[in-house]
Length: 222
Image 1: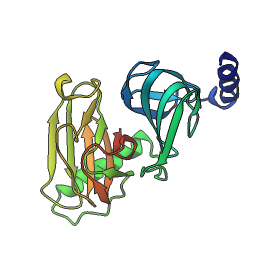
Image 2 (image 1 turned 90 degrees about the vertical axis):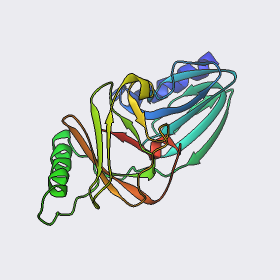
Image 3 (image 1 turned 60 degrees about the vertical axis):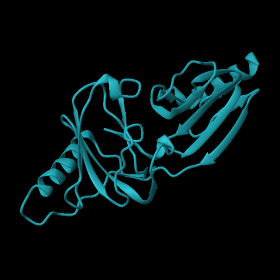
Image 4 (image 1 turned 180 degrees about the horizontal axis):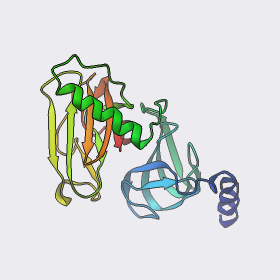
């Protein structure tokens, strides 16, 4: 087993060394004894995860939209999917956005800032392009540990959420989960989200479902 793991890590290291700390997947669920990660951790290519007998982990790959349920064994995280030794893996494609243009922080702030100004202006609002599409009605937003999260619909008036953040309502101390709070946005709507100087725009898919749908399909990262 040690030889297998060393060989796999060696292969992955050829491509992972340049971006060793770049997250490729997120831990969506854990059950039983799992060494090396916790719920809602981001994991990079080459990460080794050991599962105890009967233990289970769900990994959501953010670039390939593979969602893997792995039981037992040792997991080596890849760029788009995992390799598993002495364990069982079930892999399904889920809806997630991998084709959106990745804007710089400055461009994202300018775009979202313009959206807020247009919404509050008496002038006709210019079209705003969403930076990504979510496939769940209940986003999970990476917010950090403090501040006030504001989410406002920008293609129609009247829908706004103002959330003072505190440790009691945050998942792992840094994620605000609309599903946990039993809140849903509107299918087909376009929203601007802000947290201090950080801003982003996203659209909800017209067929999005409420509740705890796959995290990679409803994750908002500023």
